[in-house]
Image (cartoon, rainbow, N blue to C red; front, side):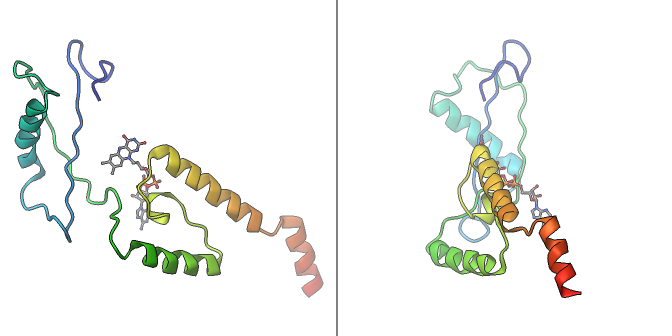
Length: 135
Ligand SMILES: Cc1cc2nc3c(=O)[nH]c(=O)nc-3n(C[C@H](O)[C@H](O)[C@H](O)COP(=O)(O)OP(=O)(O)OC[C@H]3O[C@@H](n4cnc5c(N)ncnc54)[C@H](O)[C@@H]3O)c2cc1C
């Protein structure tokens, strides 16, 4: 955002996010229909000056974006995570942790899940010994 390295010389860029939810706030028009209201509000907020010329505009719909925190979240998480823990399944990331996460946090969450899985794994040599004892 605002970086001169992403755009032609003398211009800048802004990414704005407008959120919808089938349950709470359905999208009832084309994503492009939100471009003008967003530009209007960016001008109103002083992020774009009146004399600024917008040379390119584009809207993109990401069907699944950030997770939603509702009143059932805490209990639902306990149930789902408890079940996965019982099965020994490690979860991670925005959807696994069901959290509002940034990229670096998602990365760390993935690392932790991998470490958990590795710690729980039976080493290959031990696995062969156990198999040998069984036969
Ligand atoms: C609009 C928006 C703006 C953001 N801006 C920033 C930002 O500026 N800086 C920042 O640090 N973070 C930002 N984030 C957050 C960042 O995108 C996430 O934290 C990060 O991408 C989460 O990584 P993840 O691997 O957990 O999930 P994801 O990146 O969502 O990866 C999950 C993957 O699983 C795939 N998948 C889903 N279901 C299935 C299935 N059934 N089978 C196979 N594959 C499947 C998906 O296609 C996706 O590729 C933003 C997020 C959004 C939504």
